[in-house]
Length: 371
Image (cartoon, rainbow, N blue to C red):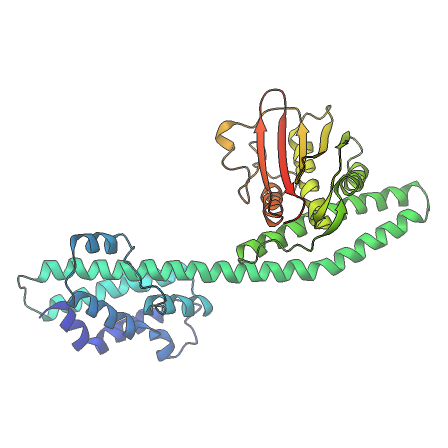
């Protein structure tokens, strides 16, 4: 008997073994009913049998064997994709889901071989069956990973949002204590709280923005007419308070008004300056310049120190990437600063570039005066 016919005729036996194995996948399967345990297994078996019944070219065979079978545009989710979605929502992990397919592959072949006499098609049917199972696994893993990423990003987004209110209370209270002039110890403690709160706020902002980009929402901006030179001057004043041991210098050349989101550009400048402080020479100043370039404004942040290695240039704007000496993450950085800066520049219709040599490292941001 051809394998496709066997699968359709012996579906109940195959599903019984699927269900029995799925019930062992704890703790997710502990309280699940038989229909939930079987989930989309019947549809997966029908899809596999249908695939085995159709002829395929060598090219189609290769694409399927590597998990890249063509998909029709606008087609609904496959049974394997829907199975992955429901398994993810039911608390299964990805290893448990893949194990279901491994058990399915073994049980189908064992039952078929035990019940059917060998024929000239057996080898070809087994190859085709394995290719179909591999394709189903590829579809399931892809969809499972997407679902897990979405759930994680939604959770982190909600967490970041809910943390803003208590953090704001801490910062406000610290500022109040600092203004009391209640003695050196109280003032010192309040200053430490203010600096730590500012750092936490920066980390929180980066995390929320990172999740927005991963959810496909992009960086949200609210442009208005601003003087970029004055805005950056105010930003650097705040950074000097938090980092009094570092010199941060500003130069403004020409007319630097435009239509931008002021808070976002303060975030961009803050990320670039903090990056320069972290990786630049500790005894040398960080130079920030804002230059009128006609229809756009050029923002540059420069520092001296160890140059960025050529091999790192393709990675510096990637999320969760840190410099070569930041493996232990001693400063609590998420490695999102440059990534967020690039996304803010892109949201304004601009771009950010970097260059580095023995003399200096420069991050250059071009910002059109209006998007």
